[in-house]
Length: 207
Image 1: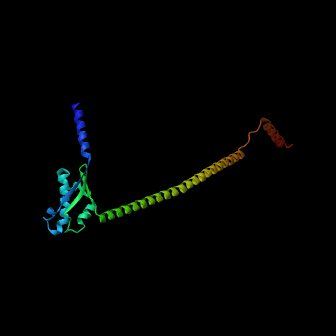
Image 2: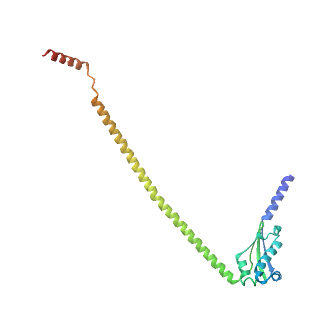
Image 3: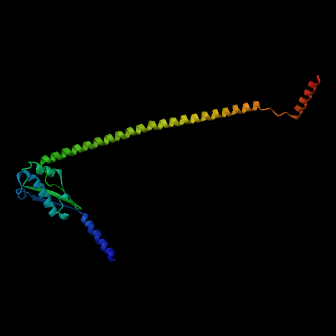
């Protein structure tokens, strides 16, 4: 029973690890960004966001590759160029397993408009792809139907040819039998043999 209970505890621990964790943070960036030259400030801001979340979301070994920043968050940091990143940023972090997905908690209007525009464009693209797929399927079906009809016509023609060949073979067999019957001598009855002998004897005597 102790082994079973230990296994159940391990299963519970695994389930709790896989649970989804959502948190919001306001990350200060000014202090860390000041430490680097002006042409590296935006890069340093991105790195500080990842380091902050790796520490607070309890990422194993502080691996920054496990923290995935949303593209709109990246655009928000780089919006004013490499030299002027924001001094602080409010983010929403979602941890699933060991990977942390990060997005903006409060998106500005410009990025909202851009996001809605991209979503509409993606929807239109998906609709076009689905229409093309349906058209291709219909075309394939229409191509398959005449092929099946052709196959049935070919089968019918083959059956007719087979029947004609059987009839011709039967006629040829009948002709061959008729020829053989002409060449073969008919067997005479005993009366006919006697009459033939008598006629032969008369002709030999000169009557």
